Structures are given as C-alpha cells and as structure tokens.
Image 1 (cartoon, rainbow, N blue to C red):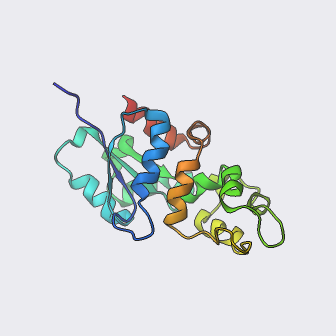
Image 2 (tube, rainbow, N blue to C red):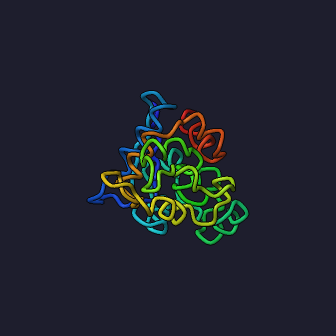
Image 3 (cartoon, rainbow, N blue to C red):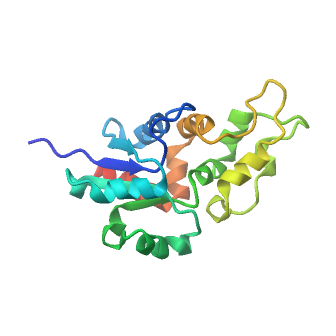
Length: 191
C-alpha cells in the first residue's frame, strides 16, 4: 500500500491573477524534496487557511500548515492559542514574520531580480541591518527598498507575481539555515 501523501495548507490566495504562489513554493521545495512534493492547497487568508487545515478530515495525520506569524518568534505561543492550534503545534510552520523575510534573508536574489535603482544603488544596500526575521514588517520593508526602480527595470515589489519568481530563486539550503521553521517543515515532509 502506498504511503499517504503529505498535504500542505498554505496561506495565500488560490486564484490570484498576479501569479501562482503554489508554483513558486513547488520550485523552492523541489530543491530539497526531489520528487516527493506534498499536495499544496492555498487556503486564502490566514484564518481561512487555518480553518481548512483544522477541518480537513481526509488525512489529518499527514496535514501540515504554513502561514505567516505576523509577529516575532515570541508571538508563536499566543498565535497557536488564538487560532486553537496548540494540539497541532508540531504540524504548524511559520514564515516569521512573513514570506518576504525569506527574500530579505537572501539579498543577492533581490539584486539579481530587481537590479539597480535610478541612483545606481543595489536593493541589498537598502535592507535593514537586522536579521530578516527581526524586521517587524518584511513586506513593507521590501516595498520600501524597491520604491525607486530604474527605467525598464522590474519596478517595485508587489505581493504575488514577484513573490512567485523570488521563491524560485531562493537557495533552499541557505533558507534552511536561516529559517528553523522551513527546515523543520522540509524534514517533516521527508519523514
């Protein structure tokens, strides 16, 4: 009998006209999971995704959840309690604070993707000197540092389409070093 496939519920809009987040995550995870990708379900907003995860009855033992923490690591326990996830804590993985922190942790991909701004400055030169998971609002930081795009360049960061492309560019090994939750999630899927 074949093993049950892991199902990964992910915070994100399933029908976005700006790109398919699932595709970007699949490319990133494929770098580590080599053909054993989980079934990925984009659940919409955080609350909707958590509801879908908690109410899934098909393969509850093989279901995992990936959502933004929207706060620092110290907020984890409160978030688990607030969303009634305490009993599922080992199956919950957070992007701390948001997915954009993953991009900020690898400034070289931002330079590769966005290039130089109008003043000839690389995006990486504008990133806060804090560790990416310590930046209070990574999405806003990324929007701010890409505000002044060069003519003919990619333009400033917008939520979905660039995110899909940036996910594909991330170095999965570096991300495992930078994000304990990403590393634990990959290990859990492999098990």
